Length: 360
Image (cartoon, rainbow, N blue to C red):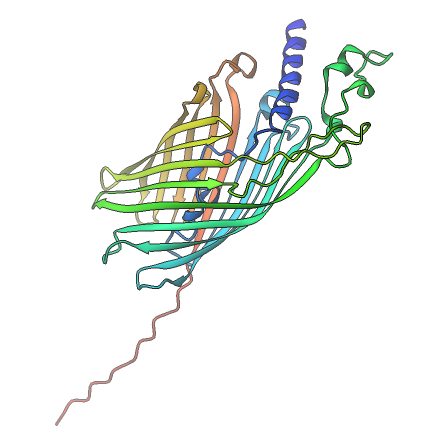
């Protein structure tokens, strides 16, 4: 029983510390990053063959460890489309809209945003084998926190007469009526895509998020001292990505990829490889499977499974925690469920009937 109590205390303190640390650096994070194109790079907007693409991804974390309380969850929805031809015949313009909400910790620290984006796909050759794409996003973002959900040392050291937590003894450094901030967010990116040969193509991208560095601080001088919200600016996040699609045989292909991102001195590097097996060529069904590894700190490995049924693609991933925290987490981490669907609406071709009249 004492071991269980110690674990609960450790997780309790961990949740509180993560909530406080997230005040200084919190941004969305997906293991299946290629299934969320607009949060990966705005230049991915409209990069597909079809009329419109609709997708979503949901990430839940630590529910199996701290209970299903929804303290760590990140849902995101998006839609994009290639709308018009560009200045040249093989160029085109894409537009998209993305929404996400990231909730973390016992204090319910929530980061939400809705952004409208556009991209220009510039053909680098006459055959359309290479493209350089520029994209950008603009929208509104906000962060809010529920200070009543946090626990501090003062409330533990000086408990209530009944032995419970003393909320009145905690340090008052958050303004409970103003623990919210809003700002305008701007992102930009560029992607180079090229077909290397008949069996291989690649893409390399760079993106920067929070270019405008909006004021997002929630910390104040305290309600009792009449303090005001902090003027802290959200840090810019740089993202470098690479993806290679390699057709090994007529039935099997593999797509190795990587992502490197840095924000406020915190770096993350992830490597993954996703295979695709042509399960049913007549019905156009592929089965997907692969493995990813988050190198930074040896944080996690994550198996991935999914399928593609014509223009519908679904994916599932689960983070297996292998960091020093696994003594508490028992290797359990977060799961992700993602899907996207490409709608193809084409005007039927108008065929003029020609009647051949034989001559006599």
